[in-house]
Image (cartoon, rainbow, N blue to C red):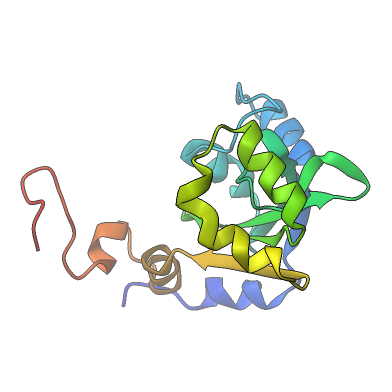
Length: 170
């Protein structure tokens, strides 16, 4: 592949961690116009990690910009217990995860507050209705992870059948 593997050796060091609030403050110092009530865009992710050799965890996001099923921070209910792992070198978000809400009543009230179709999610609510345990989940951007590990300059080169403007079928 095209990757100089020396760059990956730095990832063996502890990853950096910062809250969403700290990330926004750092980005604003670097010239971004992001505000505390916004999610990070692709350019923000590049800017955030431009001085880092290791991935950066951004954690404790405002509840308004994350999914209804993310558990609220018990120390600050305006935040969720979620994090994104941002790769260095401009590769962007590799992983997004969070602790999931396990309380049926809280989950139902959030769905109602967001005017979600409860009937469509009844199966999801039933998972909590009859008892649940504290748990977490995450999603990996596999193609983006492969791009970072291999040093591939564009993510579409890591997708077996990429969809593009002139080709939407495999």
